[in-house]
Image 1: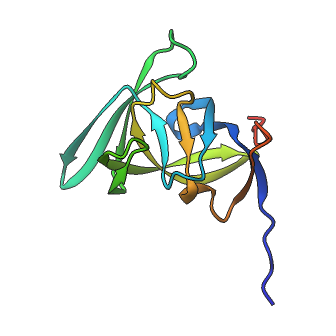
Image 2 (image 1 turned 45 degrees about the vertical axis):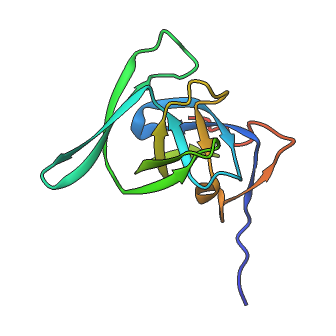
Length: 148
């Protein structure tokens, strides 16, 4: 007999931490229509070193604070995917692995980056991360806030 693992409930907007990136209290929109998770960055570059591909991202220390410093972060590229944006344009997304904190628990997340300055939230959590871990109650917000 299979044991059912209880899934935690998250709201339509959550406040998350990305401790490996030094980013805390990031507002993330939960988007069950999006396959991948995305973090806002001002700019990024892909480069190769010693036969491995890396992505260097330039991210504002805290996306809600315009006076915050810009962080330069470099990660090995886990994989690349062609993704259709919400506007129907195909683009290559460079995916890297990091940790995300919700409900005082750390989870591995596959993240890509792009300029989300025209969007309401600096981060989007997609199905690949949500699936199997959480249920979404769209009438709620900020259910998973960690206590750091």
